Each structure stands twice: as C-alpha cells, then as structure tokens.
Image (cartoon, rainbow, N blue to C red; front, side, top):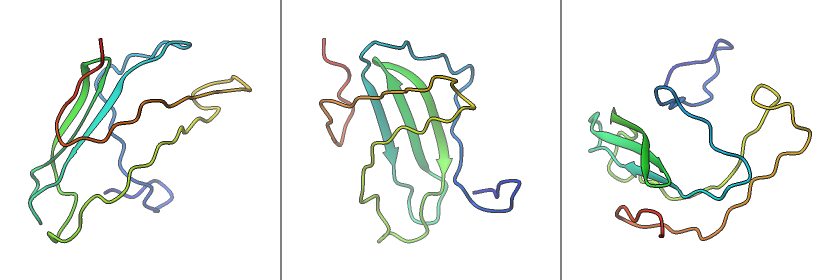
Length: 108
C-alpha cells in the first residue's frame, strides 16, 4: 500500500481501464471476487463483474504475510462525495446478497 499525499494510508484504489458509468434507476448484478494469496507471495487476486461482464481484474496482490490471516468480514457501503456527484440526495439499495466460493453469475 502506498501512502496518500498526506502520508497516511487510506487503502489502494482499484480502477479499471475506462471504467464506464453504471446507469441510474436500474437494478444491476454486482459480483466481487477476492482470492487470498499464499502467505507472503504476490499471487492474490481481486475482480468484479457488473451484470455478468468482467469490469476489473487485478493479479499479483500480497494481501497477507501469514496463513492465519484470512478475510473474515463482508461490508456493504456506498461512498459518495461531491467529487462524483452534485445530487443532494443519493440512494443505493442492496438486495439478494449471496456469499459463495465460486462464480455464480447474474440470474436470468
């Protein structure tokens, strides 16, 4: 992880090339994948799909240094600032949450 200009660590950004906007007022299927790395090796992965279409995939990630450290939580949130929108009201709804060990894909 690299420090921000304020020299604090706020996390990494994973921005896909030419990230297209997601249409407002439409339900989407958003899927996220995290693959743990072998402890201390850069063989971890992260990917995400919108409506079954792969939008970003990153490889070579060193998430952890010891085998006992594992992902142990899942958090849904929406981070919206005036940098991205000038709307006074922004609503994000979540429904039909599934946690799985393999790719499921959108329902038809």
